[in-house]
Length: 100
Image (cartoon, rainbow, N blue to C red; front, side, top):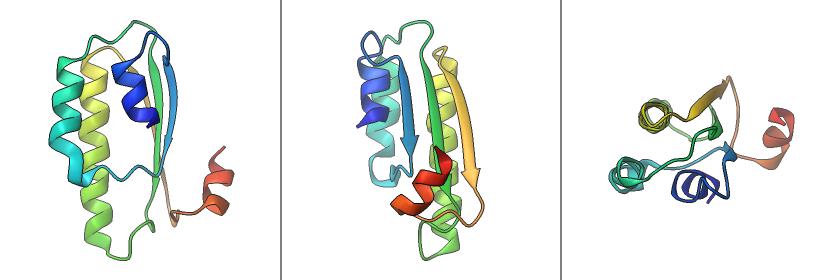
């Protein structure tokens, strides 16, 4: 939700914290939306995910590739992107709290 709001409604949501996104199944739509969006100046996003959010290491690699592609697309539109990959980070509130 925060990711979408950040690029689709940057005039309202110019800052976003996106923690543990699962974007693999919607990558094409997300990248298309970003490409078509008019993103306001001074928009920024904090994008964070952990290495243990999935049970399979290859899923972490795919997720890292996807998050990087999204960040690069946003960066090309002028968005300030801050990446934070958490070693041993899990998909749970206990770990999310540590990131904040």
